[in-house]
Image 1 (tube, rainbow, N blue to C red):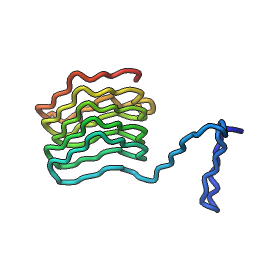
Image 2: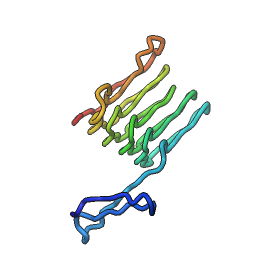
Image 3: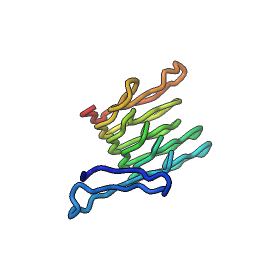
Image 4: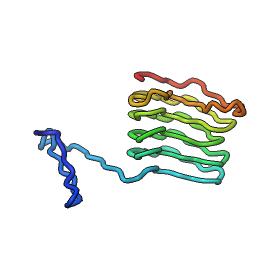
Length: 150
């Protein structure tokens, strides 16, 4: 039937029957757990890029300061779209994720003017913007985000 797929494991193939053979449907199959991962670095800037189809986390910034994710399109991740410490997340379009869109761990994050929608669809314990429950995390600012269709 059109729209169905099958994995032929002995041959290592994915077979897909398109819904409309005349249409130019894009099929994406990711083998990346994380698209962007940085550990113990400073002042990374991601601007105006599309980040999609991670199997786990789209962007994972760990133990760094001064990072910026600005004007990016982040979608179709297997889990949380953006994780980090000391990160500015501004004017992004974050959507179509089964879990939380933005996860924050640490201090002095700024999350503003993002459009977040169609997230938290497959997880019970999730939020559009998830701030970890550690009471030591301070000075995080979450403001002026447009969150809809959760």
